Length: 135
Image (cartoon, rainbow, N blue to C red; front, side):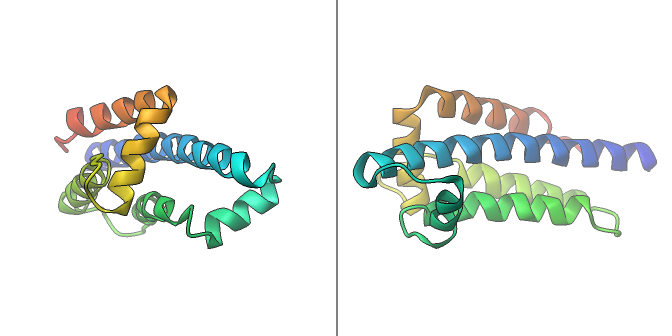
């Protein structure tokens, strides 16, 4: 049981790290596009934009997934394998680029087209989600 919990915790931690990396790359990509039109922004201004601006709102879906992982990692209760499987399934669906899909899917598809680092981070995360599903 203890080994199982450590494995779950490590999987969630690995997914979290890769999601954070992807989120940062996407935020940087959006920042560059924003600054091309509006001029340079400070870190504080970027944070405010990330929170309040409609242009950055699509990234909130990734932030919410990271928060869900944090809640599972820091829970005092044992983590149900079903909860992890559902979270992984949700992240897989979220990270499905689609130029004709919902707002996130369209903007994610565009970010993949623009930034090869996003492609690499996406592939790294999708590989982890695919290979570590057995809990």
